[in-house]
Image (cartoon, rainbow, N blue to C red; front, side, top):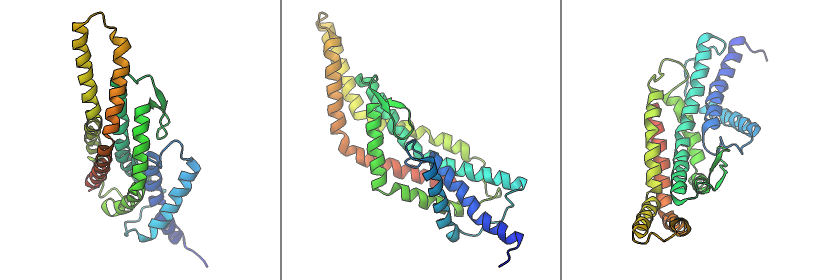
Length: 256
């Protein structure tokens, strides 16, 4: 059965643009972009997802991938995928910041381990928060929501430079400030308790200068920090759910 050159080009484009956007998203997104996730498995998964969503995507203007406009469109698809994955990655970065801030305040800044998401050294509290967030993210089918959202993004931003939002980058940068606010909310209960303990030891040191504050202060600070981390665990679930919902909603608003 003969195929014309235009038919082959149309068939390639139907799967080429979705593959670029999906593979770029998987490079930056949590779970998919983890250093422990094999690159070959990531590429195979991107090919399978692109093959599944390509037949149900809305029609969009055809662009020659080998032309100058096609090269710019390919870069556009990669940027959109990276932006979508980066927005969700900021939720996990907020957990790393919260754990690092809390660990430094408690005196556990020296206890470092490898983050399974990014493959870098982070405090053990950050690793605890990241592992809990990853399990919760998978439990609420967050990975499936991301795949559904990237499929819907072709209706919001189809391939082509006509509907491109040139202020997309600055909007993502402005939204990154929410990452620090979320980190503060996550670490605030234990930070407040540790701060009160430090203030109390400051008063005790003034009243009894002969007391060795370093021998007494560090164990008490670490113990109180762990107690309040344990007490804040039930509230952590609702905070994580709000954080993930907020990031998904922000991604939808940014691409609209």
